[in-house]
Figure 1 (cartoon, rainbow, N blue to C red):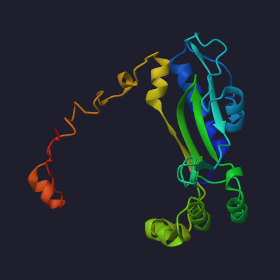
Figure 2: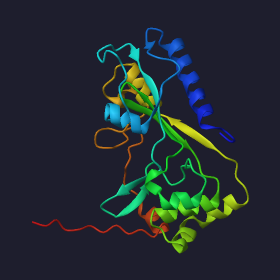
Figure 3: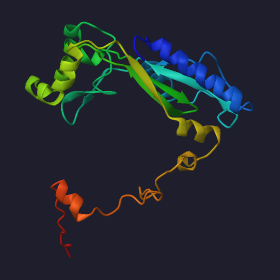
Figure 4: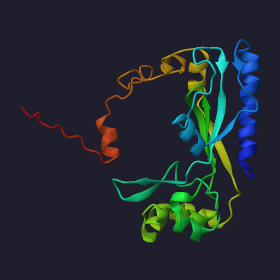
Length: 230
């Protein structure tokens, strides 16, 4: 959505799911509306989870406890790599417009990031996005990328942003996860139209499958067989 604020997106999703439950699953009871907005910090302190189960009775299968988790940290520290990384993704808009403040205290900056949770599962998530090319470049720098590398890998995006891009944001809904919860189905593959099996194969499309030599030649790919070590 262009020119949308975070609350507009959350309210839209709340209205959608409330209407959907009432129309398609009238036997289900929504625990609380409006859906609670819980900060990431509070969720971790109180529930030790960023997808808490807010049901009063965890065994009551007809009770639906929706909630939004908001105000995630923009960065997380990667100890193994000794650098900051984006907690969600690098294009998430920070709740701070001053680039100098972000560079000075990256660990204290919050993000316009939100997750949608139900009964202890994440069923959606999204963010408002960065639309300022200078801000995007600064985020990549904090993550440890050099300016030359940033321009080489993301130059096309930064250049496009310089021509003007509207403030925008969105959310991705996990409809399959939602249906699994609603239908009390422990195996999510049972609510996916054409799921892969346990070996990650698509039985409908018979994939992955062998590739013709002609296709490999077109792509300049060579397959070499290796000997098994005894």
